[in-house]
Amino acid sequence: MPAYLPSPPINSFHLGPLVIHFYALAYLVGIAAAVIITRRRYRAVGGDPDLVGDVALWSVPAGIIGGRIYFDITTPMDIPHVWYGPFAVWDGGLGIWGGVALAAVVGVWRLRRHGVNVALFMDAVAPALLVAQGIGRIGNYFNKELFGRPTSLPWGLEIPYQYRVSGGIPAQYLHFSTFQPTFLYELIFDFAWAAVLVWLGHHRQIKPPGLFALYVFGYSAYRIFEESLRIDSSVYFLGLRLNMYIASALTVIGAVWFYRSQRRPLPAGPAADAAPAGDPGPQALDAAGPAPAEEPHASRDSEQAAPGPA
Image (cartoon, rainbow, N blue to C red; front, side):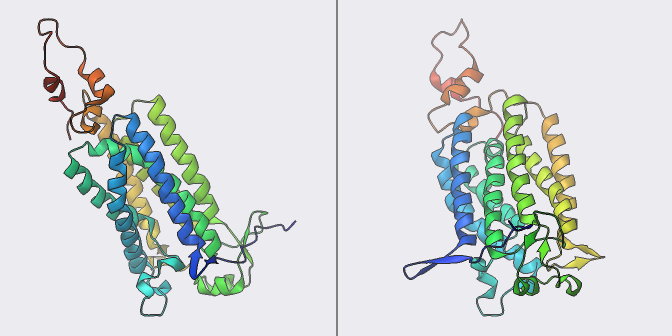
């Protein structure tokens, strides 16, 4: 048995005339898993699960575009030197933060058009995003990228020489053959933090969008650790990788966001906003409580007219 993790010998396969890249396949599987998880979580709080598909239809392309824009801006040295280089996502190169940012903007736009509670949806999708990101990191393994400093640990990742060169690592590290598998560290963290968010949602009274704020805080805090290990190409500022500054800023933003969200009063019936139009759902009816005794014939419409804040 080798005392390291070997790199896969291929990064794609042929299906008839099509070339299927494992990087793209991993992201597609991750997106599908995120949609399934979000549907289940959103239904549990009284939301319409079919709305998840509508949001995903718009947010997923926006996320890919945003992720590529972020990559092109922050690592221009890694853009392939061909006319379609800025768009060549099949070769890797999607910045998580750019993807989440643009997908969130488009997602909020779709949710507001449907008139539902945005905060509830954000909490439903938070663990699902982490699962999708973790699955997507498997694609980095097949692309032989997202690795850290040289290491002799048994789980060190073997990187062939041509990928060390193309990865833009410093010349003094080129003669090493095994490196920190930071893609694997992130995969483990993503799944573990997703489990923590799910547990918190079931065992603690987290006011929305508290879980999403914790997603921003936790993932960004982890990235500070990861960026301290990575040696692949990056824009540097004052001796630190650009992503180190972004991770630090988002960690603070996520913590402040969570603190402020938990200090707000809890809505009387938050699930009412998430219920499909014309159907307040069981959670909304429970939150509304029974009709007063002196008004035994109160209309169903009157119960629906008291949603929480949008």
